[in-house]
View 1 (cartoon, rainbow, N blue to C red):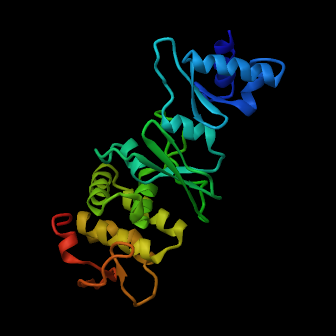
View 2: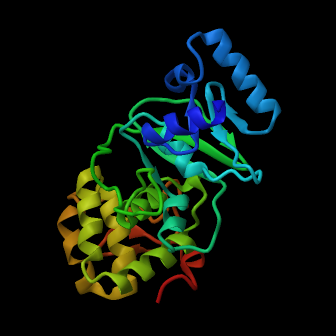
View 3: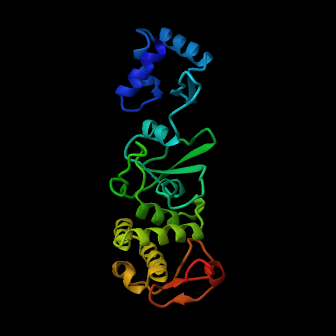
Length: 257
C-alpha cells in the first residue's frame, strides 16, 4: 500500500515513477518518522531506488525502472532549464553517438548528479531559456530544438560534441528543413554573438551553398578580426573572406565540401 500511495502521489504531481520526499512523504504517513520508516522498508525490499538525497525512482514488480535520466531531469530541475548539446542531438536523431554526459542550461549553479552511468551537469547561462525548446512527446524534459542544440554544441567545445558530429547534424537538418538556416539565425541573434553567426554561416554556406546562409549575413558584426572556426581553436589556417572565419584546413578536411 505504501508503494501504491507513492506511485499515485508521483503521478498526480506530473512526474510518474519519480518520488520527491519533500512533496510526497505526506502521502505515506501522517508523521515524518513513520514515513521514513516505510521508505526504508520499501528500499530494502527493492521497490524504490535512491537517485540522490531526497529523490527516488519506483521499481515495478518485475524489477524494472521506467524513469530515465531525462524524466529525472524534468522532475528534479527547477524551471527554466534546457537540455542541450549532444544528448539533445541524440534525441532528435542527429547523431548515433550516445553522450553519457548530459548538459543542462540553467540560470544559476546547481549540483551535478549521476544516474545509471549518465552524468548530469548544470551549466549556468545568462542567456534566455524561454525559447529554443523542442516540441516532443518522447520526454517531459525541456530539450533544446535542433538549432539551439547545434549552436550550443559549436559554442561549447568542452561538451564533447566534435566538429564532425556538429557538421553531420547540421547537414541532416539542412536536408530536412528548408528554413533551418533561418532558425540558426534566430539562435545567433538571441545569443547576440557575432562569432556564433560567423561560424554557423560558414558551415551552412559550405554545406548548402552561399544562398542558404543569407539569413546569417547581417549577424556577422563589423569587427575585422578573424574568428576561429572552433572556440579556442588554432590561430593557423586561411581566413574565409566573407565570414571572416579562420579555418585550419587539416581539421576541416573531409567534413565539408
